[in-house]
Length: 538
Image 1 (cartoon, one colour):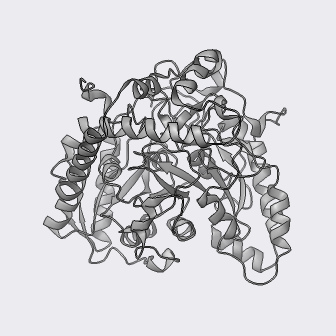
Image 2 (image 1 turned 180 degrees about the vertical axis):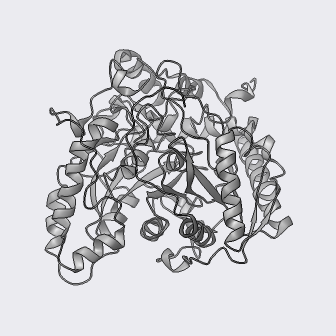
């Protein structure tokens, strides 16, 4: 069989992984479908509060879980009509908050903390789990996803599900970040005609806009890191195997990660400690034994950059956007001032090959087809039972499913037919080039703790007709390797956020959190969103 054009290998199959107000159809947003009031983006009393800040107010008797939950549900009702970030609100959220208030004794690390889940994460309640697709409205999970169960066990209140790029961006070969037939187009709260970036877009926009304290995203290649950058958040993509994926609609299992998105590194560390753990439904978590920590906040150190050795891989990850470059250069200077030894350049030897890797196409196509067919066949409820049935459903409902986004990504995956031997060889190539000859090679050569580079450029304008522009990013090495990375707010270009990525070897979460926290404390780059409308120029 012929190898597909290499121009489709980076985010196309991955993906196989005008402002919305001017759009003639945005889809039905269940969170705001019943004649919502005019959007009110006035900052509220709990906006930007951390998990610790909420818990202090609860301990002082100023707040309880029910009052906190009411506050965030009200925020969703007033602000989300502007953003279309929340695809569905949990009808039982207040009841769960009251149950938590009635508890006596030991409370979990997320007691009373409202969180939102990307609409790939199954919950066995009255909410749907649809990947943004109308085809899965009949799916009824019989159990919570492992990460959802862990959040509930820790005392979190699940407020609802967030919008996403339909099928985690795998539906179309053209980039339409944050659009789904079920949820419409998510908008960036910093500038409403801008993309929220990649498939965890709803979680990014919602957490940035204080519609929840924190949220859950998933990443195959860039889908936690890039929306965190575009929405001025901290987003952590863990090592594959650290966090269980049971009950999460799959994409490319050798690359898929579930991770937290929050407004601070500390909140991200709290969330990661809750999420990390073994999962009987996810064999990859066996490799995480001995690498997990219950409390990642103990690694946070405001002076954690002092003595650190940090490399700057310039080839590929600089030069695609001058605004991202300018912000990254200031960040590199900040790292040096904070005591880090910066090795610049410290290029990943295989960087250029990783961006257009034929073996990546083989792995994505093989794994998506196998994983999605397996998921659809086993999931309970009335819905398409296979990829061909899903493709046919979309054709039958083309007026909504295919009005803006084509399904050439799904059709390409169905068309490609790679054997297991070809797949195994391709996966080994991906791992060799991204691990031993890639990230690990440069870390070892320069005795580095981590690499640092701009996460992506400022978010592009939403364009439902032609698709969003995507200038570049830094997520591919960690994606193919299954290694961890964290994006932290670094600055703004004309009011549009840009993040800085810290990337490391397998199981280096403690080191990355230490470095990211020290950088965050030294720079304090995060600012709340402004909800600006379209204007002339940049």
